[in-house]
Length: 176
Image 1 (cartoon, rainbow, N blue to C red):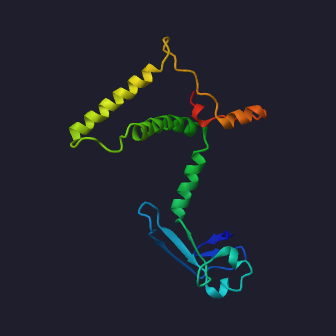
Image 2 (cartoon, helix red, strand yellow):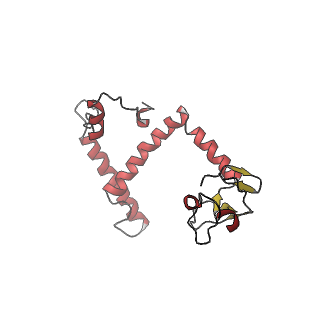
Image 3 (cartoon, rainbow, N blue to C red):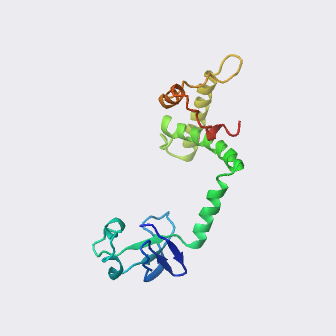
């Protein structure tokens, strides 16, 4: 069920029924999720509805709708709008490169768990691993100091090229 309208203290469903209660915000089962406001419909509203089976599968045949508070919703909308700007995409391209390096350390070099006890030894492990990664990256450079040639195209990129479909510009190349 898609909610058609949210007013102050009420929610209207696509079939025109108005919720009978508005409660919350309630904490969610996740410690990291934001609290939700819950609107409830009654059994007498939901049971005779012709689209009830597509809307709810609860045992008592009544629907509840949870949604974030207005402040959180406004914040989400503002952030999502900001994420469409070229400036944000350039900043995020830098972050994605850093995240790739962190992923390499975590998955490629086992850095989620230290091999040694104590902060000084753990720090030493991190420094030595970073040196090893840098040496590995430097060994991949050509004699002129240029980066290695790009990776071969993926199967999907080859598929697009064979059909003459233009590849969309990657968000990773926006800053370059």
